[in-house]
Image 1 (cartoon, rainbow, N blue to C red):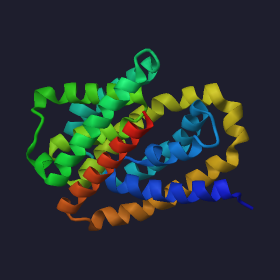
Image 2 (cartoon, rainbow, N blue to C red):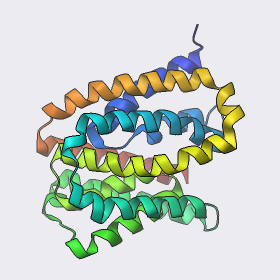
Image 3 (tube, rainbow, N blue to C red):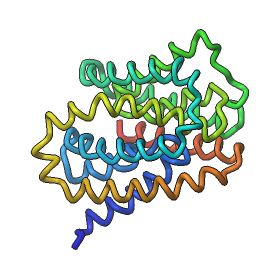
Image 4 (tube, rainbow, N blue to C red):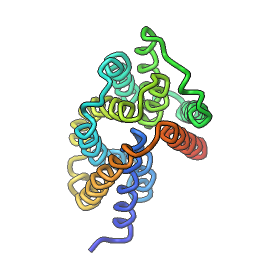
Length: 242
């Protein structure tokens, strides 16, 4: 029998999986705040990393043929490297100022997407690596890599399925590197929270499948507005939390 908290995790996981399938991010942004009401921050992040990885893996498999390999090479690999570097440097720089900076960038990128301006913005090929590295570093430092990565990817003019697939492939690189670290540090705690982890995995996987079907039906213009609105909401949440 699930507790009230576990039912809340299940519902949030369903929503997180569906949102991430449509926008390319959202599992960590939705689940982490909920788990922080019950667990300390490092354990909450470790628990979320499990459904995040499995949901991303399923999403990648569904969209594997849509990955823009050129963008993944120029942007994705540097974004992943920047994200890992930022995660290792977490706590060494003033977190509040960085969070406010990231919030401002997310709100600005989201507003441009909603207005339709981002469709006309393009990163030149020789700047793609810098955009990836900087966005990854900022996301890693603050702990919200998916949102800033998707915000930066708006400047590459990818159609909706290629956008989500490429963002997912980039996130998987980060997940594959950080999962062994989380497990090594929190193995006993993760095993103790097996039910919450299992519930979140089930919700994310079902939500991912439902969202994948929705993604195929969303028009390009609506997709841009949805991503923009989610970025603005995430930016406002980060600003309020800081």
